[in-house]
Amino acid sequence: MDSKTAQNIVRESGLEPALPFLIFGESTELLYVNTRMREMLSPSGTGGIPKDLLELEKVWPFFNEFQGAPAFLGSISKTKPSKKTEVLYAEAYLKTFRIHIAFHKRQQVVVAELVRSGDLLEDVEARQVLFRSLSHEIRTAVMALMGYTQMVGDKAPDARLELEGIRNALSRLEGVVRRLDDFKAELKVLQETEKPVSRGTAKTASKGGKK
Image (cartoon, rainbow, N blue to C red; front, side, top):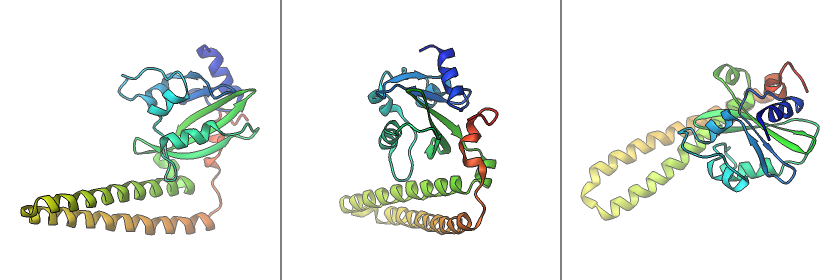
């Protein structure tokens, strides 16, 4: 598939071809990856263009608090055709993205839209995703480091003071996670009381509001 054809498919699906995008075929074969999406998949520029779903899975950066990158990609590839554009939120490179999934004839279009700071202030759902991911990632790291600290303590009893300092620092990080959890609860209350913001829709990534 050439660049012009791919861009036309994205436009006709109602999304913006200037954003990072890729196109799947009817059997989830990878038909096209544009330059901006290639940069997302290989920030160092050393990786080649994925040829199929299995290769794409190895470099796919987007994940959420419920699914790692491979599972999240799998859920996208299994999305059933619909006339309505689906919007999922994900994290990658410490940033929040809206992943837009649309269908044009037999092709599936996937567009990644960066949620910028201004969007986060207005989009409650984007804020929820960000803080859920932050608390999950910090908690996972803290638990792993606690385990390694225990193992080191068993093998190096003379390092008691150093290990105690590490444990104190990890306890402070646990406090940060608890605060993030509190903030998530506060955001949930806001989400239930505030009027939904229209920015978190497919129109954000569409050109001129085209559907």
